[in-house]
Length: 122
Image 1 (cartoon, rainbow, N blue to C red):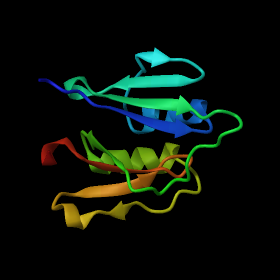
Image 2: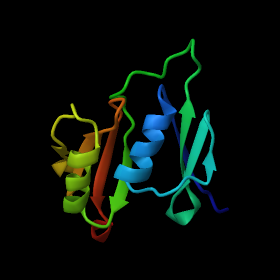
Image 3: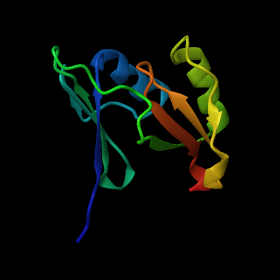
Image 4: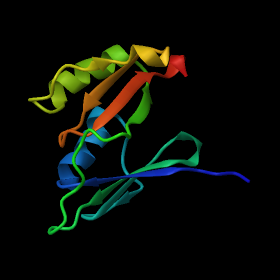
């Protein structure tokens, strides 16, 4: 059996989150793109999806037990892009030394945590 995973993040502002993950994280143009669902294709057939939270049901608070890990061409280049285009009030990235790889945790515009590492460390 071949399994492919899709990850869904419920967000309050889908337009801001779409732009962040498309432009800052570098996921490219979404393959599905609406005002309630945005889907980015990832390598290996997996997907990263954003879902607009219902108006009367806000998304879960950030900083949960789950973080997404994105592999980028250069962690240093990502850091520069994040500092220039990411959330203006975001704290410094948090180094993730316990993983044994050079990874850094960041926050998206709604405070959701995600990790970034160089593709070469995969």
